Length: 248
Ligand code: FPP
Image (cartoon, rainbow, N blue to C red; front, side, top):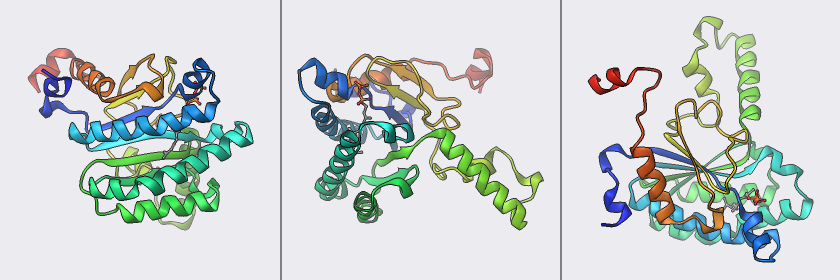
């Protein structure tokens, strides 16, 4: 029985978010430069999008570039931007054919114009996709997102568009770049570290966390399915007792 067959299709995580870590260490271990690790990382993205589609996962969010990543050496930042543009331009026809819809979260205004244009083109081209929604977190960090939401809320309050009494969790959610997306059910981090690194702090309030030592370039279909199976073995209580959950 394959791992895919073992997955209970009635208890799938609707949304999986992944912190793709370990590209640099994967490359270093092979005596290669970090860019090679990122290039291999693209192959892993392709494998994981296919695997998620096969398992009927609805949303897959990938932490591709954090706000903090802007502080990496200029050549690495430029290399990552070029790689992203190359990958999305090359993959758009296949994404379209496979019904994958692309969306992005983060501060797109900080992307170089050529990268923003390529991304917007890919989002437009794949907008009709009815399969998995692939959310690219680019120039993203939760603290940036929450601070930006607070500013917008304050501006709308000053304009009188929003009343203080109307500000609740749902309102705040609607000011985030993830507006309209369900919260992640499962957060995977590859590469062996066990931290959240400013990623979807609000949205992961009740996500199940799964950490693996596998470096991102080695992450594959089986590794994704292992994570889903582990998730399916967990009891999600949302603050309730085990008995309450069983009687729900
Ligand atoms: C983490 O590994 C990985 C990244 C910071 C970048 C991941 C981005 C890609 C694979 C390309 C994105 C492209 C598209 C189309 C979305 P690391 O460099 O932090 O590895 P290390 O911890 O081993 O140094």
